[in-house]
Length: 443
Image 1 (tube, rainbow, N blue to C red):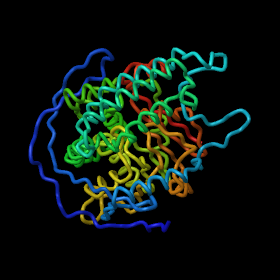
Image 2 (tube, one colour):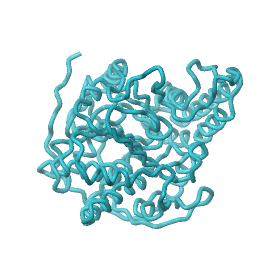
Image 3 (cartoon, rainbow, N blue to C red):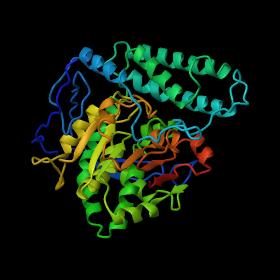
């Protein structure tokens, strides 16, 4: 299959105008059992879905203008998934250390392979509790004929799979872990024709976050002290990471009340966080810049636009090259590679800058992943080819940076940054709900 060359396309001339305003709420992070409401006013800007993928997934620096049929798109997706490789910056396996994607051990060698462990059961129950939220999203997917009936079938099929696993942990082959549970859920959805049941809410949240981007960046730029500015950017990443519809509690709260970026920033749990290497990071930050940084990104909306992109812009301003690695295929409300291309194109000005900062060193890469968690032995060849000269790897989000890869070791500096949003994760870390994790390792 012929490989399409990377394309550079000029920034859109359309500017974003406020057309309406309304209030949204978000649960306070101060309690794991109850939520406090906070108002924030959002400006809404229109957004346009550009579904543009090349036959072979390649790296772009801005939005593609081409539209491909679903058949060609699916062929490209299948092609990219069939060519997955080990992430080259993972520390090599040895006799004493071997990479394992999943952070939390669900069972031990002494456990009966035919009997579900308490940890496995708690995670099965967690995924089961999310079924109603998925069903509701699927019912409203207008791209799928007879969506309501198929959504009910999804709920029944996935519930049956989880019940089977509860009776026999080996009933679906692979070792039972979070990767398998997420994979099985996505497979059932796709079998019924559901490609992206969170598409509408992602577009809505992207539009709202885009309208707030300039103000968030201006506030960061106004902080003169370098260390304080870094801390504010880190807090912004935590606040944005709340937009996670994979968490049943947050999905319910979002459906009921919406989310507020500013209120979340103000209500983060106080330091020290459960894993808090921010001071160490500040020291490293003050000494010199990294040459090249890869960031595995997480959710759409405030997460990517108000959390990660201001941080990435600051890295660019300091001279770093930045690679944003996004999912190949939709999963929950995670931002995809094609969606991120579109977001960047909307945020850049006519000169290709992000509020005065050049994007000539910004690359958007397809990670090859299609889950809200990630196994770093299975990334795209395109991403692997970009790892030369990389001296910092960042895994953002609970799925990529805590539930998987918290203890992953790399050949360069690394950072895992996320908010704790599952009770099972809080129990493992012995943390509070909505606690924060910033784990920085320097090589």
